[in-house]
Length: 204
Image 1: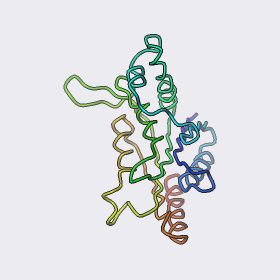
Image 2 (image 1 turned 90 degrees about the horizontal axis):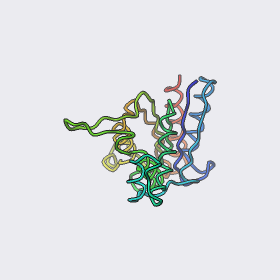
Image 3 (image 1 turned 60 degrees about the vertical axis):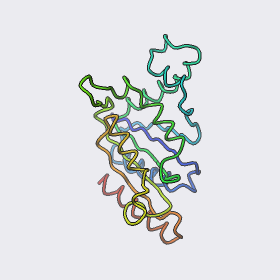
Image 4 (image 1 turned 90 degrees about the vertical axis):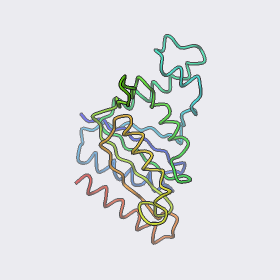
């Protein structure tokens, strides 16, 4: 039985969010094709992880029994890492905010990217990602066109997610771009239609 983890990070509600809309379409198509799938949802806008601090960082690298009272804040890291490792497929709804991802999604990444748990440094140098054997899909919505053209150099959104997830070992990753969402009604509709077609092609 496949386990699918959905991580939403849009600050907007379902009715107003392009990433949530396309993510919902993705999940519906995935479950229709793989009805045995179990789906876990993590809404980072509704329940944002704490920003990275010394207590969380130091505590997350230790067994729970060895943590100080301040380091018990790392329990959220335990929860998020366990959730991630249990999943076979990860779907991340990631709108662009100021050319990158939301602060809540960055906090999620900070909480799961823990040396010794989701990656390790090798004695000879380099790094080995420990989150392997998983497939990831990023639903990357943005107000303008950043996949190509003059704004492409400012796309630190899906490029960052490719980099950091690959660092953790998740190298099998597809990006579904939902572009032009603040460029007028016609461009908005075209961007969502293009993304829906991409989802259908990926899950055909």
